[in-house]
Amino acid sequence: MYAFKYAQPAYIPPMFEVVLYAAIAAIVCVAFYSVLGKSVGRGEDDKLDMDEAFGSTSSSRAGVVAPLLDDEPSELDDETGLGAIARAEPGFSPAQFVDGAKTVYSMILEAFASGDRDTLRDLLTPDVYTVYDAAISEREEKSLTQVTDLGRLRTTQIKNARIEDGIAFIRVLYEADIASALRDADGDLVEGDPDTLASISEYWTFERMIGSDDPTWRLSDVEPSEGDALPADPTPDTKD
Image (tube, rainbow, N blue to C red; front, side, top):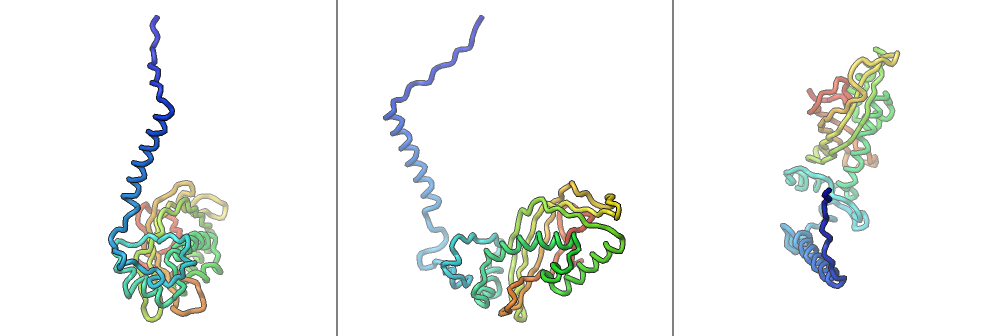
């Protein structure tokens, strides 16, 4: 009989190990510094003043992560974009807005599915509320129940912003995995599939009156979704 023989690893003196690990650590540190230790695209004189751009204080910026922005930053931070909103509203923070937009997305999905008109009235503009209210009323007349499951919200991204007639508008891209279905009064499935997630992409536009005491950004437009079709629409569109 023959047996496989495994070569024993050569013994490395302890001192040699220390020197070897120190050399590897030095190489890694140099590599990281070459990437992260440099200022890219701006000189010291060109440093961006975040207080001026977004109207935030140094304390409010602590731990804030910048939101994902559009490939054309001129639409966001020039005189007609986020910069204009920040100058008009000193407390405005794009990062905080994105955090709020994530929460509101799931709140509106849930409120529409459950027919919670009070919540929708607080979060939608009157025109959009009319569209959602009509869709809920149509379900009620047919004794249908909406079932919506937000499996994962993959993207919440500011795409553009503007101020028009004293009203600030921010357009947000949402990409999510959602399951949606309709059941009848007996609980039987009528449309859709509550167990199958579909990937959708939508643009929601939020608006708020500049200088208003009401801090709420209300949904003012929902553009048609792209991606896998959902027979039971979890968020009615406001554009054809």
